[in-house]
Length: 79
Length: 460
Image: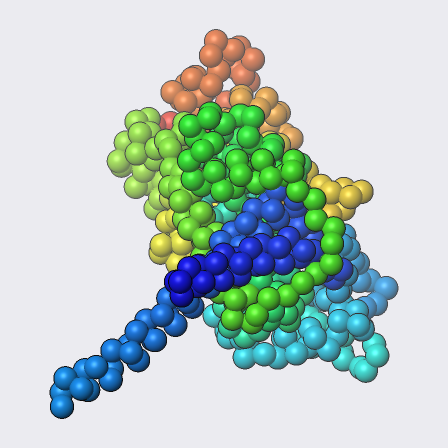
């Protein structure tokens, strides 16, 4: 159940990154043509980068929590 | 400081932050008051100072800086400005690589490259130098996109793709200031090639998205960590796409010429090289133009005689080989794909944005080499000898070393292809008579293959 919750949480984060990136626009001070297809491609790549970033962060968190849980056990075993 | 003799270089009028001026031999840049503080901070940053020291960015000195007034910078002048449409493929890749390197390094110091076009780069000899100091700005740490990405792809990667995969000449970019759109290339690519990288990422997917997406809404931000991760990942993948383009080496008509020139015996080669080396040693020119340089055998001799060399040749592959050799050996040679008979014209708005090849060359070279090129100009380009000599006189400041090729030469005959009677008057005596109108003959040598070498000095 906990993993299902983590998965839905991750999907929701990825989706919100995509929605947020879709809302990005060219700032007024940039005078170069941002392109349309190439700009969309960059948004897509950035969304994927966002998802990888979130996944890495969550995996890092998971490993950390697993290490924390396994640490007391090993201490008990040592005693 | 910008006086009545200063002329704004037309190519700089698009930049909202400033403008470039030429004042005689000086290159000045005016930075508008609303950008002055940020540009000065950027120029004084350790990062910019490091790049200038490494000769990757052009040096800039602050000449005037009054509060509320435009800042005036003076740039180190780079000898012989060149344009991307005169570069060989390896020079394009070098310029693209420098652009990505600087953009990546700037991120560490909180800056970003706001425009990424080959026009930001000049070549000082074989070395690419970033010259547009106004192209960097403070980066919004929460903004995950690189605004200049599309421009980098359009103006660097797609022209290289078009050259490699479609054989479109890089010189054609003189008609495409803002490069190619993915949809320009897509119809000419096979289905298989289109779905393979790098074209999948540069042409196919952006081309499909171009029809579907339109972005007009407000700007939004993400976390600093995520923004930095995303932009660095984008730059890494762009670097991967650039690295996957090439090598572009293919043999051309002239790229193997020095090895296959069987009308030259080894002794003639040696005698020719010895004459040129002795001539250059005796006149010691600071700047040499090598017209019809091919792979740069004689450009290298000039460079070894401590001259800064600009080497023109019409053959892209030969120029590419010349640049690669100069780059590898660190020689002060700038090879350009340029044609003496059809020089690059002035281009852009009002024909004032980019100077013509001859305008840039006039009065710049103490010595001009014209070796093994005269018969091409006479026969293939059908330019009369007096006109060629007049042009040579116009370009050189003082000296010229010219190789005369007689009508019975194998190469001359091959170019004539049955039109020998048209060129029957082109004897060595006629050449001597024409060249003597504008030059004094200082020394000459006859080779055993009938060709002759002439060191001449300009009259007047």
